[in-house]
Length: 144
Image (cartoon, rainbow, N blue to C red):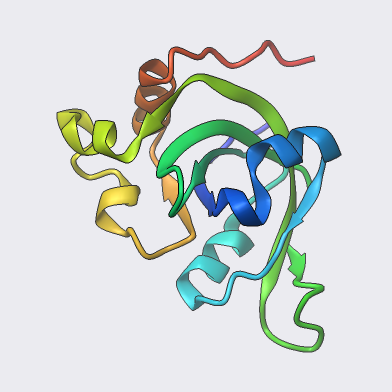
C-alpha cells in the first residue's frame, strides 16, 4: 500500500465538530467551493490522513481523520464541478493544538494553516503532521 498523504481539513465546530464525526463514524466532506481546495480534495486517496481543524470558534487542530473513499462529485452541488470524499475518525488529540501554538512553533512557520489560511483543504507535509501530533501529545493508533 502506498504511503498516505497528509492533509488539513477545516470545519466550524458548530457546523460539523469532530465529536459528531466520532458519533457518526463517517461523513461526506462536502461544501468546498474554492477551486484550489477542490483540487486538493480530488488529490486525496483512501487511507490518507487529515488533521481536523476547528475553525472560527475553537481555532485548534483537534483530531486526525482518515480519507475513506476516492474523490467523487459533491452531492450538495449536483451537476456542478465540485468534489467530495468520505472521511472517518481516527483519534482525537489528547491536547488540541491551538492556532496560537502553531504560530509560536518555529518548525511550523510554513504550515499551511498559516501560509494558506483561507483554504479549507490543504496538503500537509509529513514533518508538519508529526509535529502537530507531538504538540497534541498524541500517537496514531496501530493500524488494524
